[in-house]
Image 1: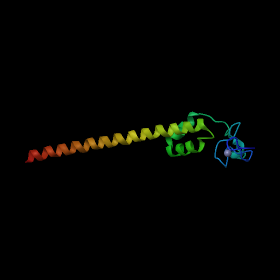
Image 2: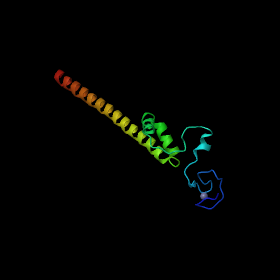
Image 3: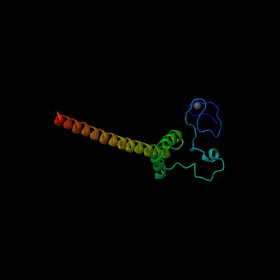
Length: 121
Ligand SMILES: [Zn+2]
């Protein structure tokens, strides 16, 4: 077939044009050839919450999947990305809370020791 963007000849089963890099598949991604005999429903783009959960518990994996699936499986990629994003926000908030608590106690300690010193002097 020919690329609908640049008009150059490309392989029939390719999803992306090797010349201009644009998405050329007309009837969705062909999952059967990529997965080579795997019965897994890879050709269907789904927004299963499981992808979000996966992205949440493994933000790095979620981020990679988001980047890999961004073009072929936008719904899935979005779920993975969303899960990873929520995980990052939760982790950052968690670390921030610990740091704030640590600063609070350190400050409290300094005030306490300063008070002790003034009492001694
Ligand atoms: Zn092209």
